[in-house]
Image: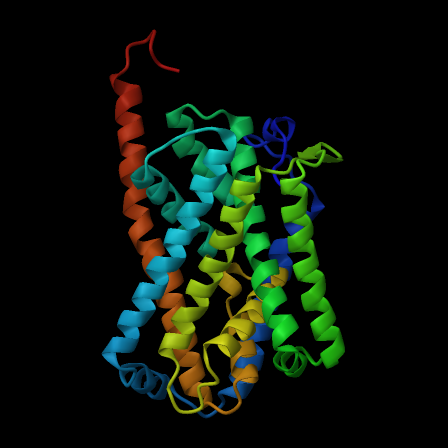
Length: 332
């Protein structure tokens, strides 16, 4: 159940827009608006100065831990690309892959529409290494699936073994939370079994879904959860020790809130993550929870975006110089 076929990749360079392309941005804006309204109600009476005061009281070693967690998360994201390239039979250097992946996710995490924006960035970069548009479409789909795989595996463990936590957060019966977790782990197991048995591909409309080799699927099983665990660790590191429920609980909250943020289509889960984390951690002062989420946004979203922009500009400048320097017969 993995990658889109090469047939689907022919549309990557010029995707047709449909009504959903206009609906989802509106849904995202509404989600942001509602979330900020709820957040305003939660934090009414607090000031920016209070929030800044909370941020500066976070110990320096906690910021260091948040930085290390960020590096782990982005290293895992680069591994997404490397695994996809191995699935396609391409060997590229870790340095190039890491740079492309970092730039891709720095943009898509902030802009939203990660499949579309990720496809554009990866196409510009990987096409210089000989990958075709269909192959890049497969790579994008494969990386997206690795993330979904990671969410299912991580969420499955949390929902199954901490159903009380999820029940409280999502207002679900405990048995239903555990049933969701077991269903997630069943899907992961079915995926691994299909890879082990080399099952026949499934065809869904114009997409052909093929199982990867078992060793590739096993790497997905590690890379996907590792990225999610790293991202959750940023927030955990920034939370105060007093009232801190522990990493596993924070991980469960992160999986649930990040899933809600993805469904909301809000860029970067803006407002959605804040509201849900504040609601999920009632034993910690609201400003301290909000400060931890701000640290997450700074390390996981804002700083990577700021670092990626010069990389993109330098890359495009080099591409332009190459085109201008080519002779009339050499230009493509």
